[in-house]
Length: 439
Image 1: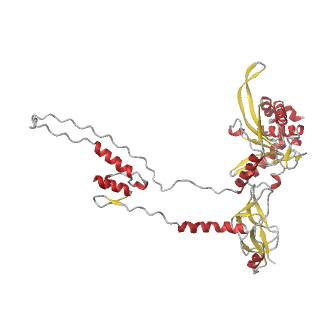
Image 2: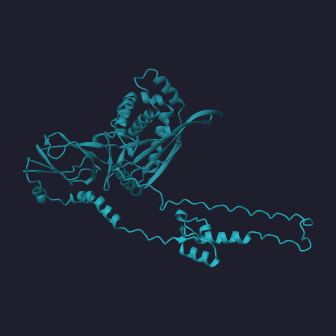
Image 3: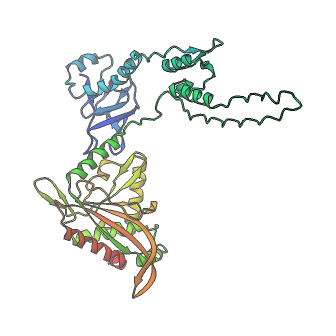
């Protein structure tokens, strides 16, 4: 009996998958575990593997979006009637995929049926040459006894409109008439040289940019962007956000990082310091390491920190698990590895789930301060600005300090202002005395 292949759920937030391409074609033999197609989910590009043996009899959707449980293919014995199998299958979930495939064709048909607006018949000048002009412009030129071919048009594709005729008539009326000779000075010898008329100021041609229609380009929304819009919209308008900002003196962290990188197996970044400091602070403030679940608040025992990574289509958040138990070098290597996989769209679902707190760092882009939207199911996210050298007061004197602003976004359903402030002050204390990260 042939088997109907449906779009599986490849991540916890996936609602539809976008088929990028098939690695098998109709008529190919298929073994369990072989890759059938590449599917773009909301978080990564993943391989769709076969789970039955047989022949790929039919591909329902060659490429494009398909909802969860939508029919995408049929696998069975060679020569089997796959149409009968599809007819008997429950296609209530798969019908939308077929509608998506048929949509472009319908759109083309509608476009073909559209008839463009009829252009008004062009006018003719005195020589019989055809000129584009509006009916009103033609009528005005005719009443004024003006050859419409001598008028410059400012409308679409040089079309002459009302204002062009009015401007032409205004220039014509303002032109000076030639001076009549005086009867007393009728002989050429006695005639005084006539004053030359002032030349009329040249008319400034109006700006024209005839394209026929507005210029723009529509870009299809990727699966990732759809989910970002939905989830962050829900977060922003469901969770009551409030924000706490502190400025941290990073002088000791700058000095310590220099010494650590002289002996560390990998180059430690300031972001690694922040991840480690937040992980240590979460152990001291477990209320921050919590999630709102509607009818209860979950206090997470593990400290799993999500690190936001910018990718071409949007944003991915790989997760550093048990961050409080790892060294700076281990955090650095893991973040680099996960960030590389994120940019290649090869992160697996388990590498992007389970976060209990999130960090978003835009300091490397020269951003001094910003606020971030909470990444569900977390109750807080920390926005990290760049390290800026600025004058500060230290021991009663003005000196140059390496200052960094961080802003904590909190879900007020879980975290109160005082709780968030205490956590933020702990992070500040750790980063201003980074020796605490070593013990």
